[in-house]
Length: 96
Image (tube, rainbow, N blue to C red; front, side, top):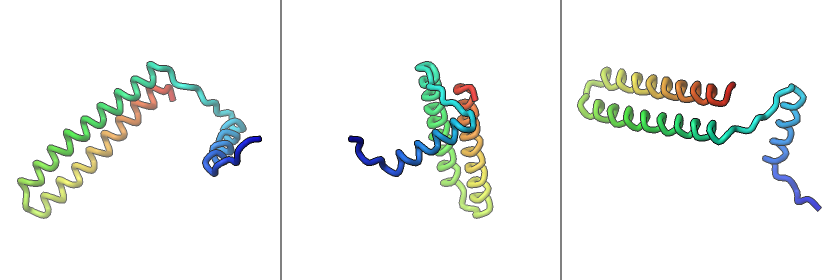
């Protein structure tokens, strides 16, 4: 006898059925793709860490509220750009 399914199992089953009905197939990643995705994520993490250190350094040298706000906006924009670059690289690796 099967054990009761968790809510997550039920939801995942429904999503798989919806994908199958829509003609979406799931292709497993190759070892090379997994390694490339891991490399892309590690590179992103390193760039974010570097950017965070530079940002903190800039914030310590600045006391002007307007300039601090500009630095915060630039920092947020850089993080969004890095994230978008990472996601685009991963999509390319997956072949999406």
